[in-house]
Image 1 (cartoon, rainbow, N blue to C red):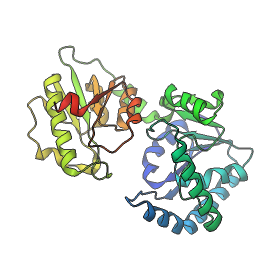
Image 2 (cartoon, rainbow, N blue to C red):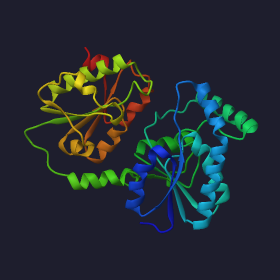
Image 3 (cartoon, rainbow, N blue to C red):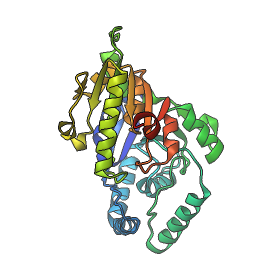
Image 4 (tube, helix red, strand yellow):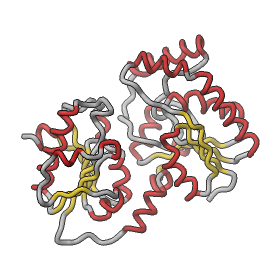
Length: 321
């Protein structure tokens, strides 16, 4: 697509997904190979990140040397929100001032600007960087200015303009560019739905393993939602989270409910997509599905996250009642 463009993947967990994007767009792929796991303890995370300083410096120096050696015209970034980005992006801009730096949205964000979060984060970053030479916290969505930012929708664009001070012409709304591998799947699997069936796909998450609710609560959320959807739709397809395989064996599934192994095939068969707040709902939009987020008092997540979807339903009010 573009000559002399490099896609930098900061974290190893993202390498497989972005390798597909790089191949489709014709970008050179460079993987930094860092791990960015978030533990439950805030203090433990600070210590872990401070202790990663030497490795981070080493990886950053190798990346800069590679970029200088290859003289890229454009540098695309896998993400621009976390602590790795905070320590890498300003360095890229300083060392390669004539290279265009372009960020890609990765994940969903509760789009709200809170001074009560911004001030402590900036203070911690400033103090730790002055003492230890590393920023332990990221800047959040839109916190680091680059030449361009590709985002999922106009909602993110307006937030960046009104709350983060971005210029409108620096923001590109193009989810098909960000997720071209999914758009290719849509083109390959696109076909008319059976007019006699109204089908929903329910995308499960790892809420418990992410520390967002108890294991018992998550199973109750899943089972009640399955029963609710089975009464509302002709067919219900369930796509389990890869890290939580086997949970559906604990549940007696209604006759019109089945497990689906392939995410994109389930999208091609469905009319609507449900989840608690999975980013896979954004992928479902590429397949022109109506997306529905399910909020619950049991899930510890900012309610603004549900503004990303076409519809939000309340578990306690609409499903469990």
